[in-house]
Image (cartoon, rainbow, N blue to C red; front, side, top):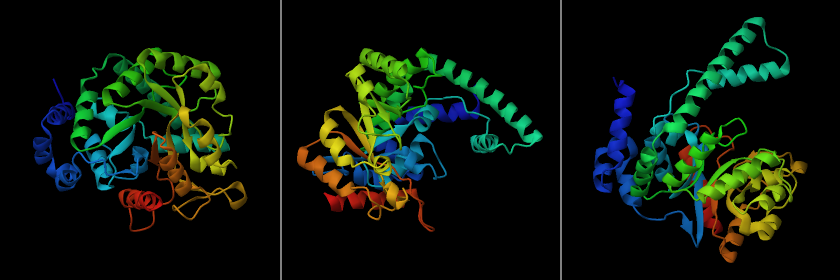
Length: 344
């Protein structure tokens, strides 16, 4: 017997198959139909040849993390292309939900690293760890058997709203994921219309070799993201391993690591699948993550280089600075897009 959640998901998936006009009419109260009608089939955030996108991680503070609500956040931001985190798509496709409070679990892990766990907290953490491991096994089984149809339906829903999905970042490409999960990740990305998947660089040469080989089979790129461990040679081994291995350069973290991103963009642009943009400070200035235009990251110069050299990869807005009181993630992403527009 189907539960209410399953019935709702089935309804939403069927709704996504409807023609664009019918979808907009039926979902008006959920996803802001007037805004989507205004933006329908327009590449609003492709400016002078530079595709500005957004990673859905930017909207993590918003109350509803469903695929439908996420689409509203994107279109309300004025952006027409997206790097999609796994949660909205996998939830839409019916992935089981964890009963573990991840925020509480990560808090306990921090206390464990600090050596400040009480005996009761240690017991609580062990129980949560066991529940998480059981959940991971359940998810792995789901990923191995799930149909790609819901992902195709989600692609249509986003396409009908004028939003293209160029990147997909589920938690399916790690060393602890099975080959079946990794294969699923590539198949789901293709069903969503993505040109590449993204993940944190695993710092494991054997794993990047494995992913590059699996990416070749699916004819889809795998792009590695870095934080302050990025250097001019950070990606070299993985790029040498496979032409399907690529870069997901983060220019803000690159500046915080002490390097000028313009140099690596010029040198390795042909191996970049997409970049992340944020405004961070240099190590000398404290490495802060600031409102755009107030840090040390050459965002405007990066976008102008992409425009002038006709680079084809997307520049992805990643909202990480503290949201001012009275604002929200959508309003701040709008400001980031305005900064890009004025730069280009």
